[in-house]
Image (cartoon, rainbow, N blue to C red; front, side, top):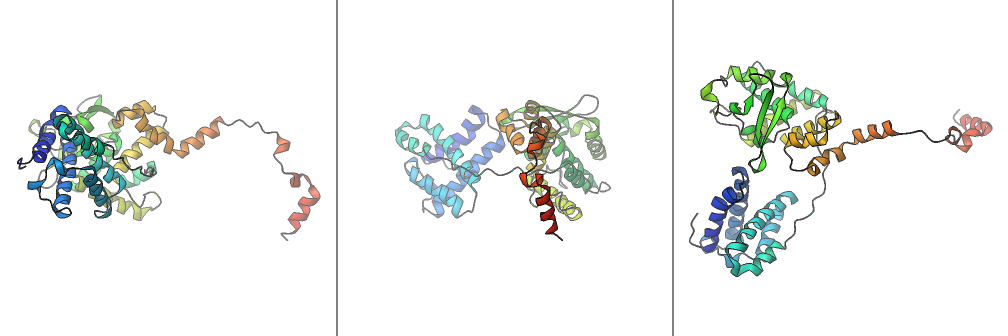
Length: 343
């Protein structure tokens, strides 16, 4: 980036030094922040007619940030979640500037006062165990890509992994030569977690790795799931694979496959199935890589089936039998007369 202005200088240091080294943020998070400012710079150029060469900290005001966020929603047709994510990136930059440039401290505090918009709580989309089974029956394992896709989708469900965590996997992330079988996932904030695997989960994975020679030593850092160019799959590529088989499964049984499905749906499905099986929510938190059980609690709140079964199990029938009949049911003459109306 051209660092001829104070805005460019501080933004460059924020993205290349502060986030990755002082905040220890992952490359994916840094890229997300970068995308926010690329969009902001384009907005200033196209809407405000201020080119990047003239973009200074004096121009970075609360009014312009609010206008930018409005533009993101109205002109870019982005949702509330995207708008709030853009705001979070700007807030992080402003927090950095509060220590680097105190001359604009009053304006930084004004920008910090911009609030995130409360988003409507959406219901969690997940598949039943029958839906997952149907989905995993769709790939054709007799083909190279079909075997890869089945291994990918099955592992993504079994581990409850995020799509980026699956993309970043390499053979050295796995320990499946001998028991206990485990997989090491690199999550948000460069956090690592180890997830146990059972033998039934890795039969297809082992077959896939053997056919692609991924157990060989020189392949240990090779992408576990790769395309025809031997490059790791992209988020769009994994999404395409999932939606292809979801469409196929929906044609077989539309009731088992939601009309809208994403890679995160498999993560939600795994969490719900663990919860319904009685797994402690603390263990589910660790498997999903959540910082707190408060995040994992959304699955407990969403599982109406488990709530109903728990209530039925705990219910004590304390109502007297003679109180369960309505007064008109006790009157046999009235009851016979009402039944006669049906004839």
